[in-house]
Length: 197
Length: 100
Image 1 (tube, chains in turn brown, green):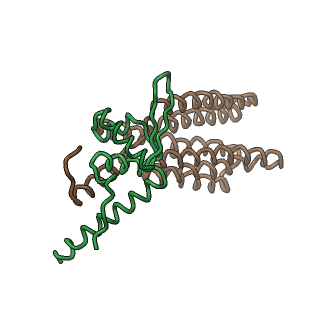
Image 2 (cartoon, chains in turn orange, purple):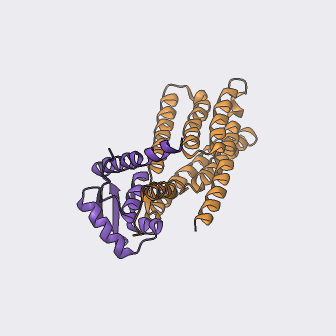
Image 3 (cartoon, chains in turn purple, green):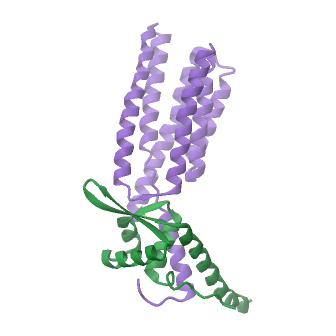
């Protein structure tokens, strides 16, 4: 890399290095898939437990999300250790998901404290759509954009669907917004990283 | 009038490093070495020159008991890079004009 350069060489070198940094696709989809499966299982178990077995303690299945949260902390710490570069994209997506978690907790708390619990699942669907859609835009990944829009359409459908079935809309949202895009992201990640080697 | 090209940036490896760092928030030494294909010794020397010019910030840390060098482009580095690209464009323009 020490040959004399003319102006054209310089511009070509700049372009090639910027492309090398830009083409690095770091989102493996792992957290989308695992979170999607955890929430899908919880929502289906809650639906079955309350509708068919009339067993209210079934709601404790949601404790699984706390286990998942602990796993996520370890997963992200490991990922950070193995990563050799920090991009602006990674940082922005990280902040988008932090906003999502804060909004989700605040919204759930406010709705429950104001005896508006029946609006909880519709609100959760609206909130699910935001980080999913934005991640899709930032990563230029259409399945996530479609997933985000699906969440918003599903939230609209709560107006016509009876309340006990709202939990099933969460299951559908998980498939459309996180599990399917997550699998597609994983395929893209494996593909691009095998080409890069 | 042609603008003078910044001699710090007008070197293949240093220009490659700055072009890489302009696209990311920060990068480890190993990442820059892999993307530029430079040897560790040469890269260390060129990073030192960019650091001395104030174009990049270099932070040394430890990760799992191994030394870790993190590089990040500085504000001065961004300005120098923009000026360098502008100067290159002023060199290229007369050529493209003459083709038309």
